[in-house]
Length: 254
Image 1 (cartoon, rainbow, N blue to C red):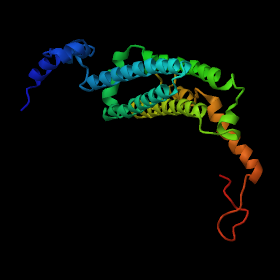
Image 2: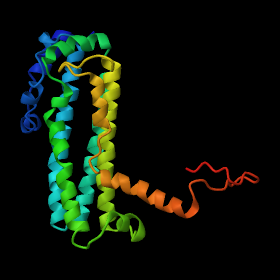
Image 3: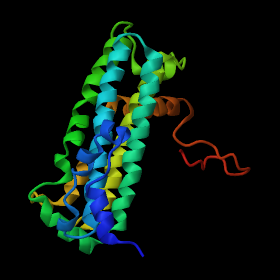
């Protein structure tokens, strides 16, 4: 049988060797509420998951600044490698939200009362990440569009060469896609925890979160795909002949 009291004591007063000292494990573990004051055992999970999210977002923001500098310094391969790191961070941020789904709506209500008037929309890391894509797009435009008088049509279609300009653009849109998937997963988490018909702690209807999930950091990169499809469609028509024998003229148009 496990001694719960002993476990709690050891968790809150860890014995540190060099590894623990370097990582400041004592201070890290003190960032959660004392175990004896948790309003429900699930509150520890709630705090840890969201604190880890803040750490991932800190690393993502730091790395995006490194990417921007590498691009401006002409170090394309280093920038692409770091884009892969940021994309991985966003996937982990999304995947770990599933931990919160192991908590019942009943237990979450007790935790919710501890938040004061706060909500996830106030997350410092989240708010930081919202501000960075505009600067990245400015760097992209300055490096790949304006000097050569290039357009996204040229990069993606008429002059398509799978070149550096294309690769960076695709890294940007993947960041955009993964960030929006994170927001969408969070919306479903809200559905599951408190329901979308309720009001947020801030007093706003939580279904306003949907507007954020529809936001795009790089609308030009999304629009170019539709423009290309429409341009190609002008050549062969919106509806095409079916490839099934005898079904001419009844294509799906997709």
